[in-house]
Image (cartoon, rainbow, N blue to C red; front, side):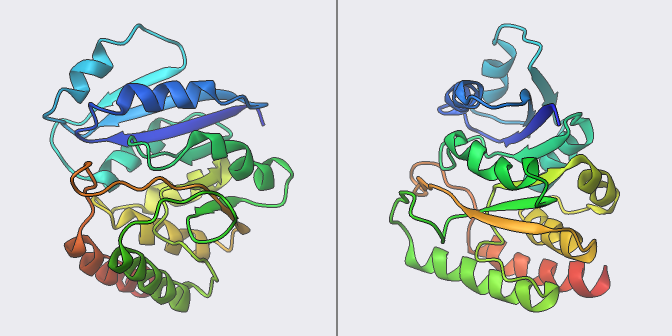
Length: 233
């Protein structure tokens, strides 16, 4: 395997977008990198920052014509990915690209088809933040596990890594526009009987004042998506 596609959905991330690109580029890997950034019609200057960057062979920019949500942006990025391995990365700095070697190892060794980066296992540093947010994540993960028969600890994690074979199988099935992309991807991976691994990652979560966007409404919506994508298919 020779290329890693990093899919980065972005909405109003002007304060971090250049930093995350630099961090992704700085990670030393045995594969080449393709960075795909999808701007979801940002209003804070993110798009202007991206288009002011020097042209580069490793960077692909996609402009959404309307604000459609994270899921729609992820789907747009996955459709353009040409790598042998595909990794989803948030545009903020909550998730560190320094974890890429750990995330890629099970796939590169031939053990896994899909890898999840869990914020709830491992010895890596994690910022202490919202109790109710973490409890909600665990409830959604447990409910998802009940339907998929997986034993994930962090279904809602941003870090989902897959091989090209998996991408080609699940991409035509994806429909979620917002944060429902997390339970939808998990349902599709489980339905395909792919080999799924989970590794611990570091996590530097943001407060809402620092720009965190997911809220309790997205959590309620995730309940519906878990039922929808596992039962209605």
